[in-house]
Image (spheres, rainbow, N blue to C red):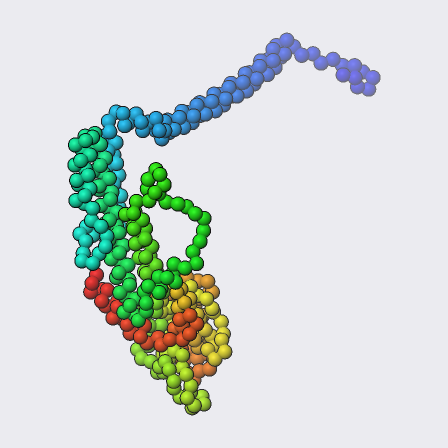
Length: 358
């Protein structure tokens, strides 16, 4: 080292050099060991993952099923029977006991005798296929029981709609209109055909769903707990002018702020002010049905909100063309007002009848 014209020398002893080299070698060795360990762990993890995927693929492969069939068709049939039994128990746990016997007037086939003869013939001709034939018979019987269940629920909903003074077939037609979407063909056979018993099940379920949705959208509860009506539907003397005028709904008088309830399941289509009605809420129930709740003091719902039967949607008031706190309630079918009283009166009898039948 040169400093201010002087030269100095730094000497590193052999021992110090050996010590430094040893430290460097130790660090390099440790790095190599760590990298080797990480590489091995990654390799082991990849190997295990590949092995797991291979095992899963083997279990799910067609070859695996073929081996099971070769080992014993009875074992496969036993597994299928357990699956069918599981499906039936799960369905009945949620829906209740499915009807096994046909009632007078029902059009669902009862193929138990025919399938029993078929099982007997197959078992005699192909003994090893007898178990599979019995499973097929159980499956078809289950489909027929489900169809009866759907038909009876649909009939119950249809009767309830008829007792409310509406045409159930017309409501089903309205629900079933304006359909579309991508084609996803259903089939129960390899040739692409659909067993008529399965087709009938699909039609019965669709009719049940349409009728029950229609029933849920019909006014069935009073929109307020007020026990009486101060002004009925039809012609009356106008409270402001005294001349004859048409009243398109029912008036329920009550304390300011009393809760107002949705008379049926639906979607809120309007929240705001309308001339003459003041603060107003309208609910679309489908099938051309709409209910209107007017003269409110407070809104408790928003446009687009889905409401259930009896949900609170606002509070009674005297906004708009009103002489005092009350609810003006309307039912409209395809935009035309109808008398709400028959709906509300019939709905009470329908609910009592359903409860007694249940």
